[in-house]
Length: 105
Image (cartoon, rainbow, N blue to C red; front, side, top):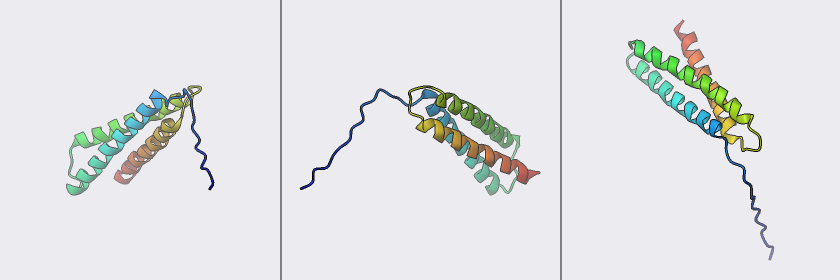
């Protein structure tokens, strides 16, 4: 009978706090963008300026998330999973805002 070998990794590395916060900003931005899109679609485009301000705030969150993800990636001896997730997701959020602006012009 073959013995299965279990590999344990003992490390004192942690995830970067900036990377985690970047991912949190990306999730918040995505949720609010989806709410803006759904409500705007259900009202057939008759929405006030607060929805535009929300989309602008989402783009500010995304820009801050990209910066935080890059800063988290530059920390030595850490895990970078959340930094990568935050950067990629924030770029996707920025692309969504860009598509909304392009479609509105």
